[in-house]
Image 1: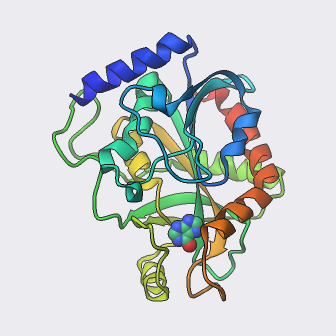
Image 2 (image 1 turned 135 degrees about the horizontal axis):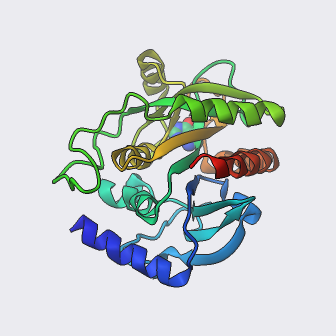
Length: 275
Ligand code: HPA
């Protein structure tokens, strides 16, 4: 069933453009303006794409862009849907499966996250080394499609080191303050309590958010190499002296936008030779 759905989705997208993307990009909260750096061939609203759900959250626009960043052919999800919006965990991951079915080899995931380490300041970036799934579910639950990937995917190198090193190289070139750490995903939509933040710290989390993990799981399932970067938009609850709001998240993301865009552009352009 999933395979048939993907075939329909892919054939619709391919009817809109002959471009064959090598790299997929998922733009998180407030980071959607990176799309201005893509020489866009076609921008397809999610509502027109068979089997896609439409995001309801401000800061998430809901377009699939096909185009180039430098010489790299890319497919970019401008806006993601979240589990807390009420979609099934499989539908949250479906756009990522679509990128994989379109033929990408590498996926760059971005998100906004709360920082747990005391040395993290709003506006810093964090290379995702690994993740902890605290969403209480998994997008691979249910029958496995053997043609897409294995029943029990290995997650030892969910974010391959060579891509982390490459991101680090470009962050240094752009003189952007960054950390490397473990992204921990909860369902939201509440932000965490200070006690939950302590618990996540004890577990080994460096940053906390409400996305990304479902997408990274299905990408790994389908053999795609993943790299991830979090924009630390705020200190996590209890570490921050004030209450958290979505406005703070999008405002901080806006502040680092120019740096973020420059870094992602060079990084993605450099992936043209990684096939
Ligand atoms: N917690 C969860 N998700 C988030 C946060 C946070 O502090 N900041 C941005 N997304």
